[in-house]
Amino acid sequence: MATASYTIRVLPMSHELEGELVLDGVGGAPLRLDTPTWVPGAYSTMKYGRDLFDIAAFDGSGKPIEWSRIDWSGIQLSRASDKVRVTWRAVAYDPAWGELCGIVDHEHAVLRATRYLFSPAHAGPCSVTYALPDGWTLHHPGGSEKRGEKTFAYPSFAALLEACVVTGSFERISRTLDGVAFHHVFLDRAVGFDTEAEKFVDALMKLAEEAKRIFGSFPFQDYTYIFSHSPNAHWGLEHPDCTMIALGENVYVDAAARNAGIRVCGHELFHAWNVCRMKPDVLVQPDLVNPPAIDTLWVAEGVTRYYEFVMGVRAGELTVEQLFSNVVNYYRHLVAIPAGRRIRALDSSRATFLNHTRYPGSINATIDYYDAGMLAAFDVDAALRLSTNEGFDQGLAQLYALAMKQGGGYSQEDALRTLGREAQKLLRERVENPLPHAHDTRHQLAQLGFKLETKQVRYIGIVLAKDNAGPEISHVLDDGPAAKTGLAPGDVITRVDGFPYSLKSLKWLVERREKVQLQISRGHRQLELEVSTDAREDITTLTWVGDDAQLQRIRDWLRRPELAWKSGQAIPLTAYDNFHGVNTVV
Image (cartoon, rainbow, N blue to C red; front, side, top):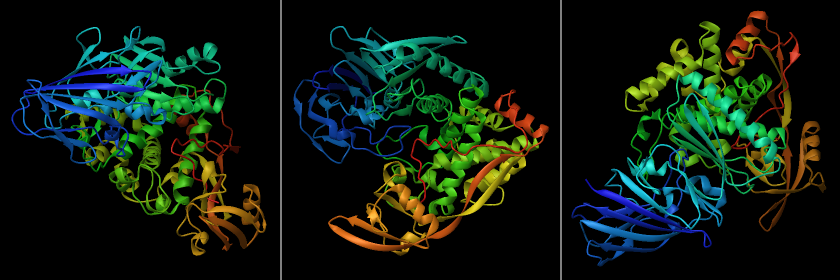
């Protein structure tokens, strides 16, 4: 079997890496080397190969081997050699994408194998020696074998790709729970760090307790959170033994930012079981160059989205009201957009490498499997608790056990049968049909003891950019009034009924007029369009009208014995937290 040995040198001042790969025993065939085109957990392709330059190849005697690029991720060596040494340099500074490909700052670095060359034909064990600047310390997450002070061995390149190695200047808060080490590594600080960081870690340990309660045990002995507070970082990516997360600069001083941080930490930790070990079957041996169609991302991501809220509530970090408000608002979003009424959760999973990144028109053509899977999980959890008083937790633990018995993978049929159990018919209906339908989220809420009220609301059928504030239009609903006038994504509204654009004036007119005059800028053209308004049904209030038995069911479900709702109590629908963006239809 071929062996693969890497040496990775960090060049902090130029924000670059120097890489060396030695392959021994690769045989006589001409050799292809690749960079990954995608990384597990981030289901979209990217051009990681563009970062590599100064590539050189040598045979076992040190003679150069010519090479050429053959596609966007691969290079081909011109001749065969049993032993090959390849060197390269790589640009390694892009804070926004640090979770995917690491980042080299002048004071610290997080090293990921996305910028390393590998041989898809030789997927066996590999080792890495990290050559660091003088005085730089190293923190390596679990999941590898230490073979020297700065040398680590991995069972495969895929396993190496999951390792996030931290070096340089950082701070660390470590805790232990049931003999398992949890490390919280901070690359930088934010306002309030001195007094609030320890409290934040306390909250994360409560989430860990809740996750363990669901699955029965921890699947690791050493787990690492890697945190950035930079507003330029947009991180949140799971790995079997670690995760990289951007908390933002206000996480310690703003309640909403703290809640968002708690949820993303719960989400990525939950992935240590669901997706990092219990995997959709096509991801057990991932093809890192040619991405597959994946049936069950509604389980891998959607169910995890649901549990980021549930675990937060059970840990006492989120309120019960926030959970139910989010459930209603996720439902409102999906039934308001055309794709929500057209696309199945199954289809959204299979098409992820086409639509994971939002684009103009996506609101008509695709839904987010996070959203669809979250609602499917809630609906089945509610149905099970109403019929058996055993919820989704038990089925999830059973699917995890089944997947581990099968080598880590599970199929669509495994998920439907095991997660659904007594509510299997409902789960199949939820996954294999678009919303709305008779037994969807509205029905489950009513059975639990909630009253939903709806009313007709006026709309023109657009979604605005910049957090729904405009003036640029990001989406036009193809079945709404605006689609009949020629409005397009990218149009910028400059005037409304002859007056300068403001969001409040636009909404005021839409609510009160049958037609609205819009002046828009499209490229170098100025256009005048008259847009008709129409009415659609929308959920406007959520009220608790349940009895004591129903209230006790929710207390037991969410482990909140202090919950004391009174019949007729309104549940505010103000909470709606979606990392992929809230699209409000105007």
